[in-house]
Image (cartoon, rainbow over all chains, first blue to last red; front, side, top):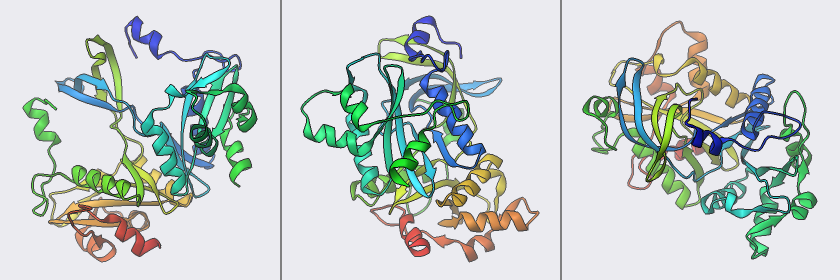
Length: 183
Length: 183
């Protein structure tokens, strides 16, 4: 990747102490590769949605010469584990006291409701205060339905969520939390 | 979209008689929108995977100024129906006697095997000879395991596959075939 500096900075995410130099997306992608290689689960990150404005051909083939990022209407990761549909997203916040709900678009929230209604498992992985938390979709929807607040207090995440174990393989063992809750 | 002519031509897909002017991707996207609106299934097309080489900012925000298309390692559509993980792709061929297996990359074939092994439903929607055929992943894998051929004869698709009903809503009722086979 060869981003100009301004973009590089914006794209850079929270670096945790335990996984120095790796952002949350890298950690999850590595975990998913591990789950795939060990035939535990089949989960992929969806490509970033873009709107192509201009394209042409160069010596490497088709090349996009102008495109914009689109707001995603679903979550970033999905796949299958033990026959169950899995659908989640990863969010980082530098905020210490609460998780701003502006991180979750209206469409994504509705998508979580749809996934649950159709029998799937949905959650967020939240990087906050030096840990990675699994917060289940049911608890997110419960909170939003019962609160006027625009952010989820850290105390709620600590109470309802699960700390995801950090390992070498997988880097973030979020499947272990799914096992605990659903299997 | 404002593609140069050369690309526009390459991007254009087979136009069926029953759905004049709409390509297969449009028909499936409309069907998925219908299934979502009617709360029947939650199935989306994944964005096209790209590798971003250069990006900058303009008056609309971040803009990609150079990117290439990547070969996908999974199938284009996935989601959930009646609690089951669904994962499929749509392919068109002008060929009348057989479906060239070059349409299905090695990674995509392996992905279909993975999906089945983990309890999901996978298939291809094949636009061929004026009809849309549902060909189940089991039959595709069976064929590839038991044949040296580089294409699936149309007779096999007719025998093992299902013609997908064309309607107004949904345009292609592929869920009806899933019901027939799996529920």
